[in-house]
Image (cartoon, rainbow, N blue to C red; front, side, top):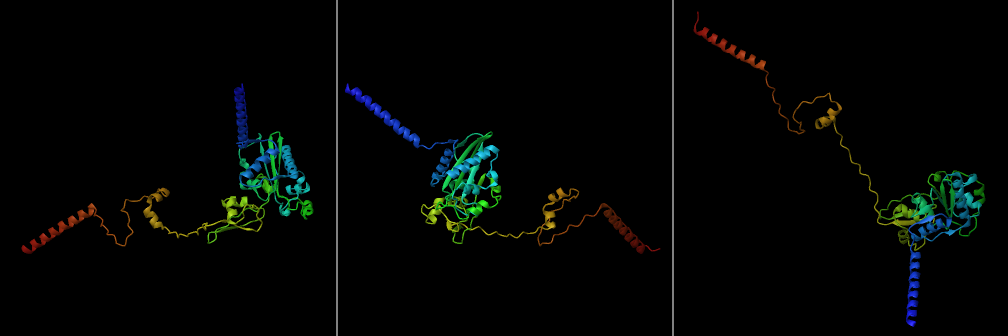
Length: 351
């Protein structure tokens, strides 16, 4: 009786063990796609994107959750995909009003960014959405300058509206001293150019540097630029820039910092000015008569031998005499013979 019991116990333990390992394997596999219907899901896929690039995930902040959700609700209510805020305030002013300790130059907007989009159906994340795959939108999700994240999703009559807000807080966690002046300033048109792109952020565009004579390419970091934005513009990777500059795993770069981004690069070739040989009208007429005939069909070209441009003089062929000239010459010859014969006869037979 013990053998059947032991066999049943063994089978049961094997089944439980197999199911346990199988469930762990399934949970460990990354999902091929994810339907994003909640703010938490949007934050999850964005932080997953950062992890795939070796970047730390951003920390959820309640102010960014509030700003992004209010923007998603505003877009759903108006049916417009826009960064503009109700009341005409700017994105920066909204964050400061809500109490976020925004870092960066506040007169330029500070270190913050927002990606927005609309979709008729819930967003299916099979990768970065097409509208967010350019360098600026990717920088919102992958910039090393940002420390916190928030997301908002709202459903309107015509579909779903998504807002993703990322920002960097001050190292002390305290507001900057010039916040009052920023809040009382007249809102400008800082969002006007960004609205057409579906992005709102401040950073100086990356201008590519040319190689030095030794082949090194140096880049001076400008406001808001990150290792990601620099790497993508130079066609290299964050890891390569870190290795070239002995940064280790440090992802933070500073305004004015000079980075070595490439080695053994080729300098752009100098333009070669090739003198043009003028073509005279004579050579054109002789070498391409068909082109001239196409332009002036009324001109007829006789079938003459091809003209050769050499130093040897050409020999002219005399023109042949017409038939009337030959007849005249023949009559003159006959007259000469008759006249000569008559003269001889007169000399030999005098009267």
